[in-house]
Image (cartoon, rainbow, N blue to C red; front, top):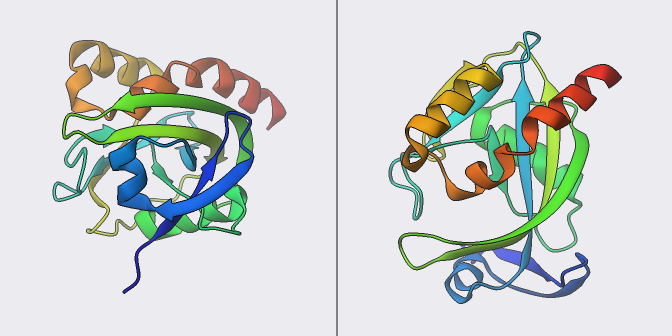
Length: 177
């Protein structure tokens, strides 16, 4: 199996090259990423608990799914692909916003990403890929906020960073529905 490459980008998300995924995280280089938030019809967020044997952040709770586009793959396709690979769900995703972050991980890796964030609505239940996720739950924004305040170490750093923008974006998203 060949190494997975990701897309290196500048601060405006313009491609500057490609590199193997683990090396990018070891060097802390800015690269393109996708993040998906799925809500049910009651506006509850579908959280996943990352598989405990992941190379970083294993066992932590996070957004519905995330990942990286392959070179020459669109962010939309990458988000849809990762949602199916991790959660077994095929949904129509709506691009919501973009953001950049540079977050050191506890194991010496760095999440330095230019992220494309997508939303979807579904009452379907996920079919977890055990290599990607150990558990899932739907929770209200208020419940997630309480859990984050009580135990932020139970969540991935990128989730803590992006979740701050989710309540306002969800209001905008549900008005469009």
